[in-house]
Length: 439
Image: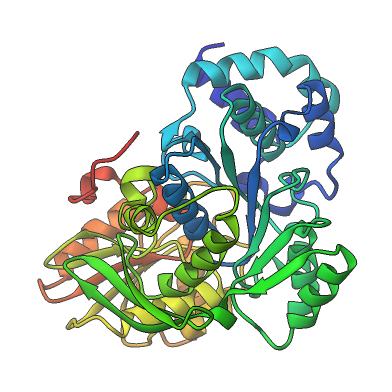
């Protein structure tokens, strides 16, 4: 098989969450363990950081990877899903896995794939671990795919486990209460390791305290030590001033990831870096350089990403209630005349809960991603109309953007949100200011 044939095999032969939803979610680690045992247990040959949570885990993963890269460490990064290219999921120092490695990997284990019938995600996890092992990374940042306890990535013994926050998402697989979801997320806490939880949430705080006691793990809540004192945009960068209550110091950081919600992620990252310092020395200057160049160093996009001006066009992968809330908080800081909101969602989200949060006075453009899980644009429009929202439906996100550009004035904002799969289909021709970075 060549590379395109290999991708076709991975996408169509194996159960894939983006296509099938919960049917592709394997509720045990058997297949991943079997695949990795077949490969010689590569996950045991490199150090790692494991990052989970409902929102912010992608941003946190990329920030930590950028910082470690800046400090001179050979850094692996495994994230999901991808926006444009499958190889975005697996990187070393910002460089995507080679097409030839993907082809050879699948060919070499094809008989094992046919034998145990793993999911698409289980294959990608095994591929990432194998790639990081062969290339002898100093450390790998591993983002949880879904949940934690039963996620395919949860066979590593990390240097540090990080849980950003807990919100209501994927309830059909993780549980119907915050406590149930927190228990699943806390499943990445390993014995005798250190754990960072981004923020205290009174309702679920005991879950992490109890799990850490059981595992004899050292637990740190980032919000106890690091607090945001100021957050503002300056020359297209997010400038965040953070107080370190333990050291009684205040420091200002510049991030190329915009969106005020990144301030919370920054506090989580700072706590994580503090705990990593013993084995991975990271000077303050290096830390700041990594934070200022996350996009360039790791190729990270889609979080309050401004891709056009006059009218301003923004892409945000917010797709659940906590994420939408953060996105709307950011929107309140913007100055604009009219909001043009392009939205597409998948069927298994809390559609009405999310739609009720959105501003009634926006002009809506209902659309859908080109995946089987996508909620049809016409159906989304009907649900929105029942809530008093007005707009038209479009066959794909690019048609919706074209329509919004025609209707918008230079003082308006066009905001695209609702699904990472929708953002992935935004044509690059709309992205007039993508920064150059490693590909």
